[in-house]
Structure formats: C-alpha cells, structure tokens
Amino acid sequence: MDQLNELADLQEKDPTKEVMIEAFRKHGAIQTYRKNEFVFQENDQPSGAYYVDSGLIKISQSSEEGQGITLFLRYEGEIFGNAEILTNIRRKRYAKCLVDSQIITLDGRKFIELAKENAEFSYSVAVLGARRLLQTQKMVETLISRPVAWRLAWFLMQLGNPTDVKLEVQVPLSHEEISYVIGCSRQTVTETLNKWRDKGLIDYAKKKIVVYHPNRFFTDI
Image (cartoon, rainbow, N blue to C red; front, side, top):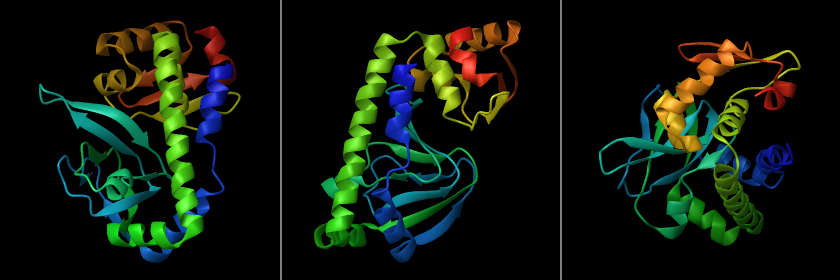
C-alpha cells in the first residue's frame, strides 16, 4: 500500500498550481466539448494550453496499426497541452474527451508571456513539470513491479471517490483502452474483472463498476 499512497501523494492538490489556474480563468476562454470530440490532434501546431474545468480527457497516440493507445488521463482540475507550447513542437499525441467536458484554453502566446514575465507562474509551471515527471517515473515502477490485478485496482480507484462501503465509477474506456493504460492485454482486463465479480468484490455492467469495501480491496484481490 505504500506505493499506492505515494502515487496518491503525487496527485494531491498542489498549492502552487492555483497560480496557473487563476491565470487560465483570467486570461483564458472556456469552451464546451462533446463526448468523443477532439481538443487537439496529432501533428497540430500547438496554439494553447488547457485546463479541465469539468470532464475527463484521454491523451493518446496512434500506433503503426492505426489504433489509439491511451497514455494518460487528465481529470477535472488538471492542466495539459503546455509542454508543446514551451518547446514549440507539433503535437505528438491527441486529446479526446471521454465525456462531455468544459475546458479553458489559454492562448499559447499568453502562456509564453506569463512564463517569461511572471515569476510565480513560471515556478508553478516548473513544479507541474516536476510532479508529472515523478508521476511518470512512479508509474513505470508500478507497471514493472506490480501484478496486473493491483494495477487495474489502482486505475479504478483514480476514477471515483471511495467510501468505506463502496466505490461507484463510470468507466468511459473500453477494456482494450484500459489495457493500454495499465500495460496488459484486453483479455486480461476482462478476465480479472470477471474473477472479481465472481468473488463478490465488484459488480459491473457496461460502463459502470461498483467496488465493494474499497478500503480493503487491495488485500482481498
């Protein structure tokens, strides 16, 4: 559980991020996106950075076979798309809404201006980059050292707010997309969920999963 707690710590609210969020709200433009609508696509010239006011976004990359491989999820309250603004390179991945979402776009020129002229904003950007790097390093360690069941359980915990009794989550990803995120096969995701359901640990149908007694779920699996 120590590794789970460390991952959670890296995802906790960062006080320095409030400076960036304030800038997005002051200088940005809010826009509503529908489910499955693209925020940006591969090879786009970056025109802005984005803040998820509400909704859920997947950051994916096309494989050589043309399939979309989901690399990250960006939740409500998270910022994305800023790296290409700072490095001035075309988008290597695409961002797509998994549910209806509201996103605040901060123009790329304004983002650069704030990064150069506002010390607090620059520090916030640097902290965000450092936290993302640590999250990535920890996720790589998790994918290498933890079994699939643990990785799948951790993924489900990120999608909702558990109570002592149960955790209800809407899962907007297919089993294949989940397999890309946690590093296994689609068949393994399906078999693991079926096994948990047979043991009475979860119920699931279509896109909804109910996890019973999430506070001891990692012990029971």
